[in-house]
Amino acid sequence: MAGPLLFTPMQIRGVTLKNRVVVAPMHQYAAVRGFATDWHLMNAGRYAAGGAGLMMVESTKVERRGCGTMGDLGLWDDAFIPGLARIVEFIRAQDCVAGIQIGHSGRKARRFRPWEGGAPLTRDAVVEALEPAEWDAWDLVAPSAVNSPDSDPLPRALSREEVKELVLRWGQAARRAHEAGFEVLEIHGAHGYLIHQFLSPFSNRRNDKYGGNGLGRMRFCIEVVEEVRRHWPQDKPLFLRLSVEDDVGWGPAESVELAKLVKPRGIDVIDCSSGGMSGAPVTSAGPIGYGYQVPYAERLRREAGILSMAVGLIVHADQAEEILQKGEADLIALARELLYNPNWPMDAAQKLGVDPRFALVPPASAYWLEKRARQVRTMVPSTYRERLEA
Image 1 (cartoon, one colour):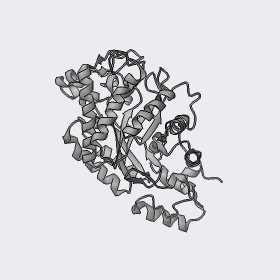
Image 2: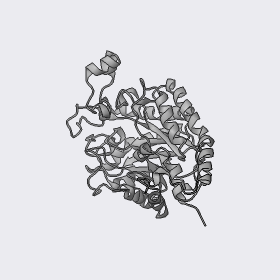
Image 3: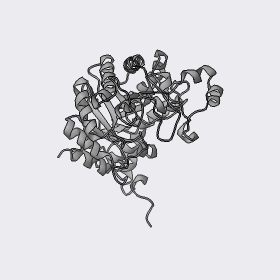
Image 4: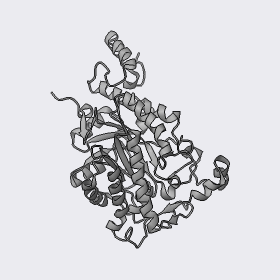
């Protein structure tokens, strides 16, 4: 009898994932002037060592002014490659595929970290931490001079020449990701950041070829995909993350249309999220509960004929397996649940009755866990129940 789909290997182009568990990209805001730190090595390493098939490094910015905070990772210069290569090497050593997401914050740039309040940065804060020139160079840009709903500072509308230059920057970031050794690349087109700002009629009021009708608003995203694919090897998978529904004009029908356009241009997987333009989570999805975004992944998979990745309150092993068995998605991405339990893949494999020898994790962990399981048959791991029953 076939085993769980969650732990069945999957090949996409020339890359094979040992299972369908993906560590979703999660901002750490721990970089120093764009450079990776030991925190990034530790953070990526713990997930890779926990048994995931693909570890996706956080949104890494294609240019300096695209940074959301002073702690964003960067890929706008070759100087960033060695630090990221060190992370790739460690991920690979754990028998895990290394991926990275590249992005640009657009009008959502230049902010305090979320735990510092998340408000727009002040000039004084930037000058104190960096230098005066950094404030002047870190201007807010967007498709149109339109504020965020909470009356953030007004961004400057990008000129057509600047848009074309930005497309090239995405391509160069892809080249650097390849040179660092990453095997999977994801373009961040969701959550109210720059590509999403071009896609949504809420934020894109342009009347040139990068605005106007639906195809015009998709043009920037399509050009980014084409340029990235020019610099990203054909045997390496390329993902695109979308806010399939943003509740202010961009929705599933538009996402399906875009997916059909980017698939022949080299996109292999649509990472299906939502929200970010006028807040998150979106309200049209109904009550926020387990797997509330999974219907987006199912619809993109079915209507666009493309691989999809589901994310959003996927918490339990049997829940993840059911999503795959029902054909609602091809990959399962977890984020905050992995913050809670970095060994979630290992734990899920035990609950689904596979991997009795703990082969998903490195020998330094597997040896002792397998020995304990063999010697103490009545022991139940702490993740299986709330307390020791009397």
